Length: 210
Image (cartoon, rainbow, N blue to C red; front, side):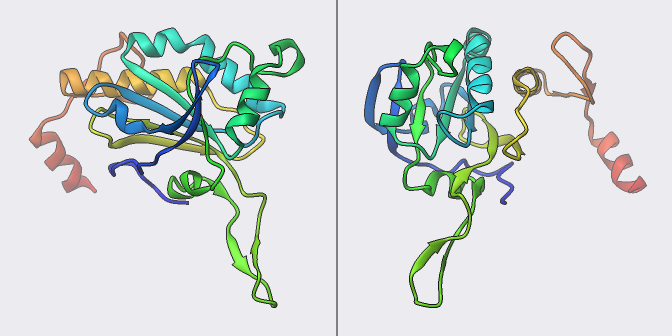
């Protein structure tokens, strides 16, 4: 599992389902560089139980992310056809009908691998055949990427543990507040709270005490 915070987000070009209906062959996060923040999150599989609750939760808050000039993009190791099929199933029946943000198809597993969230790996057996050592699906990874393409926050949950979309929104608010004001955000900070002014003296005192 890699830590990408402070590094450029891995780039990719892949097939994706966008606007809830259109399949494109060349989806990339590069389209947001210099323009938008991005919440890029992975989920394990289509047609499962926890995953649709997360996908719908992000859709429910999509306007709030968009009002902050932030794109929301999801990704799993399923195919674009699988994404499309799941979108045809109503929410009441466990489907994701109504999801409009992009769903990336990481069928090669390379996106999940490069982001460090692939559950499993490839190895060779005694006969020299390549085999998978796990289910080869993505953990519930989430990455907040700034306009320069730098990962500023990441969190990875195990398969049974659904994420907090409100926490993703809070972290986005904290990053954007810091970018605008230059003030750092303490524990449990939320939009409207006071932040802290970081000075060279305070940094020096912190280092001297640690």
